[in-house]
Image (cartoon, rainbow, N blue to C red; front, side):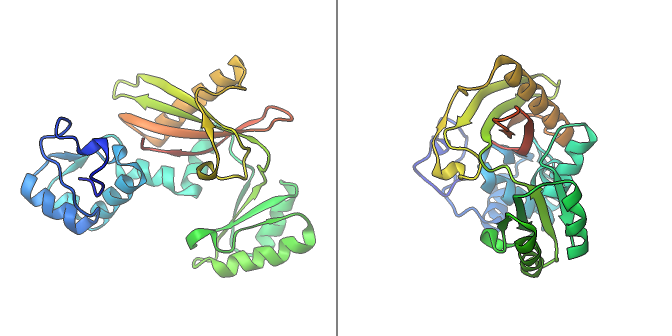
Length: 258
């Protein structure tokens, strides 16, 4: 199922049946009724595929037609997409993430200042287009920006994190199977540092400035991340940031998709 007739995924040699239709739950349900599939593979459809699979699950459509998800289950997708769940999962297995945490009041935000130094990234939960997000460089503006963020979030929740501006940004493409074999397809390095969106930047593959020791560390953490999140089969991308001053490497996020 694809809304774009120009992509290779719609090649008739790749699938028994191809549908050029809008990518909405209603259209996909109609196709399910006609084709009666046993399973859906959401991890090859990018972010749109994951979102659609989650919507079909929430509406009970997968249960109604007795369809399984393969590649990544609902709980794995949720764990990877929800920042709080992801951070907790990484902490449990000792994979380093950005210092900080979720707060619901100014008192909680002030308490985090013992752990992290300025500049501090402020990101309200569940806002569209980064509304209310900001960077605080000192205590005076920190309080104002936290209050703004809490007000912007519909659930009055803000993620307060150490700033990664200027850190090097990397990505590993990983494939894993049900027997727990895993391989790194490629490493990718952003030309620009953290703070400039990948979509506005240029990337190079393979990564150019990693030492072998750094790459092996990143490789081990990426495979451990897939096991922890629960991606059973197929591809995922895992993103890392490296502090150029001291070499500290943290995991930013992972997407259970290609």
